[in-house]
Image (cartoon, rainbow, N blue to C red; front, side):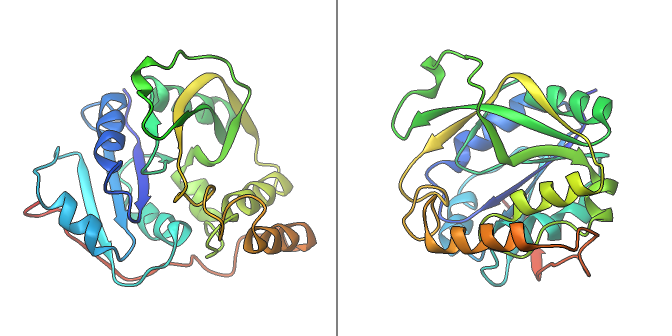
Length: 237
């Protein structure tokens, strides 16, 4: 069965999140779940409050803007299923992704990395043909919940913490396996963390975190799981 917990941080992506969640639900079995962490964004809360949502989705409002990795850390302990899938709220999941990622993570005993294809904001993603692009995302992957928590999750950084986690996992002999076909579609737009000037590729902050990753010499679990305060806002949504 395609049981997994998909964790989705979101901040000012209300124009994309409906399509994202619809695609995730299409890839989940009836017992799968989606945990959406709203990063102290009233706009997003107002948007999701306008509609009723599938019972497999739970929404959580974070009291302070903490960034996507703290949200992932905070929601991971709540997961009801053995496998976690980390996903972004502006992307589109292909129907077979959850099942494929679970199988890869289970067979490898480690991290399952997902192949993706880009599409431009405004482009009809349904018309995009699936190709073996050879492009693999750092931030979108699957892993067993216990293994993720045993490493105390991600650094509480704004960007780059997925790369740091994977290097730490590699140093601890945690296997990594890659999908053999496209699993999801990544939306390119100027306000994404990878697209905007402040946090995108080539930005000063991303370079600083990259330097910290390669200078790091302690590859054990982090001293603690970095989490933040939140409250569930699913009821009445």
